[in-house]
Image (cartoon, rainbow, N blue to C red; front, side, top):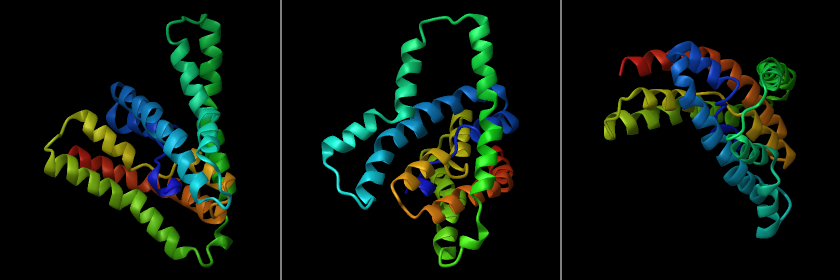
Length: 209
């Protein structure tokens, strides 16, 4: 659920949106990432991880885990700081720090890849990646295009984000809770790598619906 249900809508998603849909669509991607993916991870994701982990925790303990989860705190702080205008040098410094995210994340993904750990995990790995990269986006595309009949650019960008590889944040939460770390690491490493091949195909399909 954590590796196959949450998409990498930030450091992979945002550059891919800019490349395939243009800079104006970045606003949609940021909204999806902050108020969609990370909000779900900070609430339902933490709850799911706690429920399925070996330990048994009370509802109060789960709620505490949610409210002290760093991405949720960062989101709340960001909203609180929106009315304030930062000096140019602060904004530039933050931007430079933000620019390091993608390279560091890609390095961390590469370091997690352990192909010698696939023994006994191939079926689960294929099922998870098949769902994340193909089945789930296809079902959502059928829902939006075939049933709801919506073809706006926002819808296409949303579906494109849904086709991203597994989210690193969700994988970290799963590993922290002892939920099959070898499988989760492979899901993230292979999923993000394969998404660089599948996303151009999804872009082509979404632009021609």
